Length: 385
Ligand SMILES: Cc1ncc(COP(=O)(O)O)c(C=O)c1O
Image 1 (cartoon, rainbow, N blue to C red):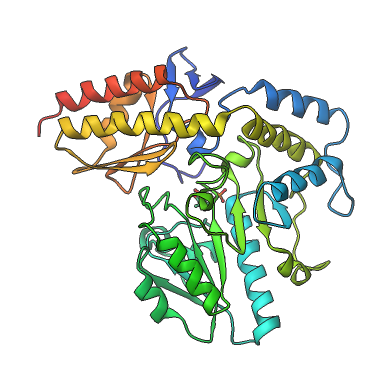
Image 2: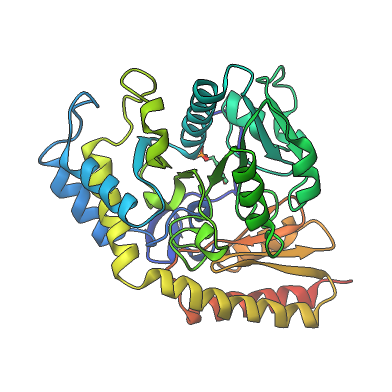
């Protein structure tokens, strides 16, 4: 295999809830959750049942036909969001591709060919395909892959002044993560998103929210935008939407529907009956079984415990995040802490070199959180300042 990932030297063979086991039988409590994916945890019986039952009925027929699970999933997403229409694909990057294509075509049709520029944020992450890489505001991820797609303008996150000055007649959309994930778990300033929404409305620019990492209950609401008193024009989802099944979705308002008529966009595997049956079961469980409330409660509990650690150890510079998307900013590289946690039976990861990130399954409880906090406490005590 290409060595495209900095893999830990363990092979995982099974999982159950918030726990996974390696080939030697060692148990780990999982605070990576497949990188904000496994919302219902590992080996979810709800997911297994839905997949097993659907696999006996219909696995794939192409998007030339309607299928019941796909239609029902679209209905559930529409009923629980700002959106009226859904397009299914296989990943977050593909959902963002669809969103940017939709925004460009809609704007060109409505305002003319000049209107194509997409404003995006420094430090953002939108995927690894050429278009989403072009939209990603991180040099280290882009190095060596130029030339990029034309028509992207990069501005700092959390800066309304810069957004205003970046707008001219060529701008069709703004894309942003309501909380920057890979960028280091960066929250928007109070009223920043409201400000962005207002500016977009004023200039008739589309607001694209990338909720690939923050969506589906992680922040303690089904979608992160619901915390900030705004609604986007387009939103993208993936990760926790499928609890590990490959799915992405692009949701949009009715007004944008005609832009994507037959033949304008597509995906062979996007929303197959097998995958959408599994996803439907996941989404229904998130909505009906109290996991979003659990994410809110456990997120607050966890964050307070992290703040207590910050008060004890000066190596911790900041505690960030919302719900079960939390980060600890350190004054140094966090790799050693990640490795020691793993030796002691906890999976966590480190982003931007110095941010320990915690995105566990939304079913996590106080017991698991306390165990991790004790482990971090021990490790931090042993570190020489
Ligand atoms: C905010 C955000 N957008 C897009 C992506 C890309 O998703 P995928 O890896 O499914 O293509 C990610 C992945 O980490 C992400 O965090």
